[in-house]
Length: 270
Image (cartoon, rainbow, N blue to C red):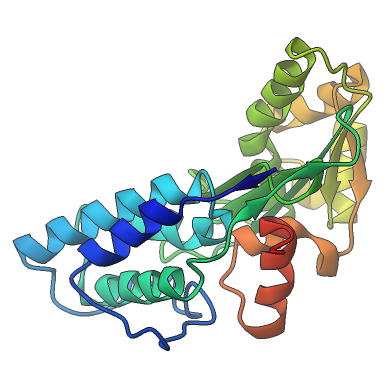
């Protein structure tokens, strides 16, 4: 199944005050400075309203046909109350990318409607206030059915702690998706959670018995995932970092790596 929003994208581009030439190309959605607060004067009222409006339009698009713009939109959405000139430049870059890829669409296919695959990861202390960022992607074969990309609400003291919070952030959606599919008449045989941190997998599968000296202060509520493993609601498997789809949702990739993960998230473009 293919999802397109061509008319919506064309309207966005025609209404945006910055116009792009037909041959103007933007390879990626954001630069390496995406997570930085940036500098520059606050936007004047008129441009502030434009910024707010087009971030909202981009958010609508990112939830439906263009999941590849989700990480950038998530960060820009956190800036709408007081955007500065740097934020405006990030929005212009995003709109130029949308212009460059307006023929793209989301392609979904399922290898097995009874198998759900979730990729979950977190990027440690990447925000200006040193909070971490959660990313999650769900697929059933080709393309991403759902994507989560959000700043964590708690500060943590290690990458393992950040990734455990990330799993907890995504768990309600992971469990809801299983229940939703079963209500449609597809009993789920496997609800797989992929992660690239083997230490975290031990924590999640064994709970407190695998908690070392560094992680003993972890709040016990994050072992909720351990109960879900024991109940059979999810199974956890290791996935190498180079194949971790959720990485796309937590950091601004460039070049070959960006193209690789964009291709698996958006699916076949033929």
